[in-house]
Image (tube, rainbow, N blue to C red; front, top):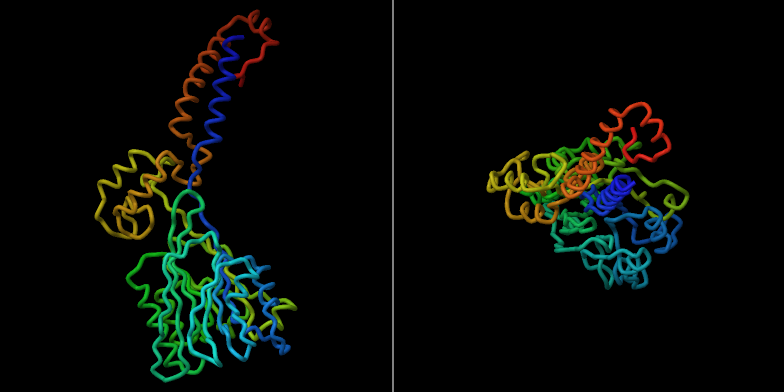
Length: 371
């Protein structure tokens, strides 16, 4: 009886330890919406920001790239459209003025999940060689820290020139140059005013992956959500237009929603299912090295440096891989489980070697280690 109680206590202790072990970093799903709202005026002629907000709320996005926003113009009765949409959706709003217009401003906007930290924001002026309407691109550097591991990525939002292929080409080249030397995962959303048959599109996809490529109705598509650093993104939903009775009249564009999954940082450099001293050794042996698959690169920026060491410090003691979390016990748990299994093994051997009469006498006894 003493042995049985001891084994029960050991089993409960091991179970409790497994339940409260640090969880491994998980991939983060991001819902990304791009929407040209036509300053809130629908096909029915009604100026209705609440209708636009309801469409956004139903989509439940983490990030929204908005085009054709009015801020304080006479055309829209001095509505501060970005501010009002932010309030109605519960998202943080950022306006990027493109031009002065009718006593106010006109341009792009971004709505961001309040759980994301906006580190920096820039509103770049795009080239305009054909002297068309001025266009810009917003660049936000964001940080997510919702699983104990801080991750960063960039979000760009733009509205390219609709009147000049020369301008669109120059503007795409400018945006590509913003990211060409970076390995930071990034998303670009907006009204690009171009089709896949055009040269600017071919230029765009030299730096960006287009997960909307299989979208139905693509020959007429001009709104896009594209991503960069493909090894860090998993496409959950390639990007689809939201088509219903409300979106059919709310604007002269349909909203496009894509769902991407951001890979977690991992300091499990030797991929044994644990983050421990062996991984630190791997980092030490490779610090200063660069490359797409170099050991010690926890944040996927293709360089082994102090940022990767910081991630190792955050994750040490955790399961390093999501797939391994349910199969590889942590060292602390193993310290409890191993003696228990050893005792169970000895107990089993004694039972197996006992005489038949002993087995009959013990038939009613509870054994924790029974097969």
